[in-house]
Image 1: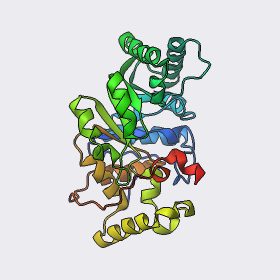
Image 2 (image 1 turned 90 degrees about the vertical axis):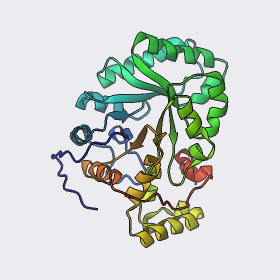
Image 3 (image 1 turned 60 degrees about the horizontal axis):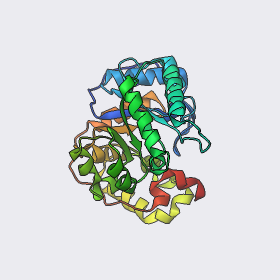
Image 4 (image 1 turned 180 degrees about the vertical axis):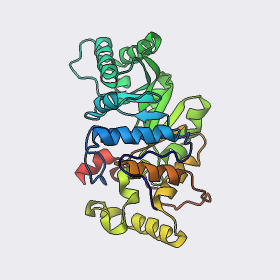
Length: 304
């Protein structure tokens, strides 16, 4: 799939309402398929201009994403809704409320904004610990103060929701969802979250780029899933369609999902994503779902 985007050019293509731009690459070398490392400030500015020109209105970042927040603050986030995430509360934290407020104040300063659209917990299991109520109350206090519009959680697996939703009310939930990882739908949580009027953002649509790699470029440590990769690439070959288009079409086919978070290393890649997300595709997807945590949870990949 070709692209006409130069390094400094930004051309509106079409209005995208359901994509969000992930910005981990703005702060560190992120993604198993990343060949270019951390994105430069000038490249970040070009990507944000391209995103804005095409109706992408949401940016996803986190305090733990290296320099991501600082980068966004330098290049400017005007016109975007920013969702960021708190890191794990330190075990020796004596005053959780103070710690949370200090974290968000520093985050707002780095971002150069007075309010963020969403604040998520990167380690929501801490809500089930003895200090969980205090942590949740600190989030609510931030909402009431106007520094945060929505509070919620970022999860690795839908079963985390079983205990959390019983005890707490969230405005926004972020979860992995892709052709390979379909648990959010299979468990019924996708529908349940929407029925409870909780905003849903999904990530890992490309499985950090694994699903976009050519068959020969998939790292050897993923060989236990050779049959899955074979099915995927045979399906693409038979239908003569692009992996990018298919990966995007899958989550976008679920109307319950409010935003599909996508990451890109360059403006050219982002332009290709924007184009591919609008291409017509029949609702026919390959059966390559997998429930094995060692594959669908990238935090485990270092152990392979």
